[in-house]
Image 1 (tube, rainbow, N blue to C red):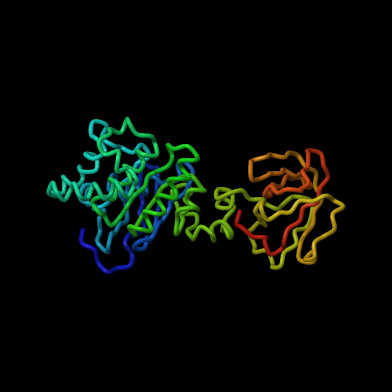
Image 2: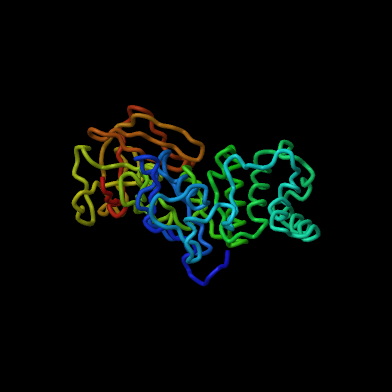
Length: 349
């Protein structure tokens, strides 16, 4: 597909996808800039996978249009869209060696044998599998298979890379390792990348922007930092990390600004301090709010401790980094929580 100088590499224009009377995606409008890493995040049934299938050409929109480099592709079949795709299951050919798996897309494009061999050698070296070319997928670990899948998606040099839950089949350590690899490959190759995942940490780590979806529609789109620090809705606040909603807790919430109509106050667990009730207030105490509570539970999670503290009629979550000399609170302990009023956010219910 010819590339044009238009900045918007991918554009969804009021796209709807119906399955009978049910809208998997409804009136979606979205622009993905050239070279951007965009992640579509949402719970099961939110429509995120349908968006990727629409972009890949595996399903057609019921209404609206999809443009790539300024040209409509709504009626273009998947095999004519110049895109690399990585599936959660890797979708490697089990009867072909790693080398033949990588050669296949080049062979389909009519590339000569010598050029194919050179390109396969280069990409194998890039993904650190230069000694595995003659192995079959069944002889590789999950992380190695994922590297082969990424290499196959990139080897034909497509302008767009689509990732469908790419790290969902890996354990935690491998996921973290592959997150770094994907980020490095994106920086090196500069492909416009659209990734679908339900993993919030993965989305925050990899993305230039994140689209949070809910019930077939976009709830909010922004940079990872803005989405986490300034979520627009209670759904986004709770889905992208943990959120304390400060209402019905038997005290007046103090804020540096007026609370907008139709919103509730929210604060992230790591923004809360926890201390013994006799601990002196901090030097910036005039900018903080203090509330009393009783510890319901303490959860140790390696670098973090998580406290559930009963305050009035509700429970607040406090997350603090483990450090030497810290006081450790037990269920039943009376404590004092505090936070900067400027860390308070207001989200729509």
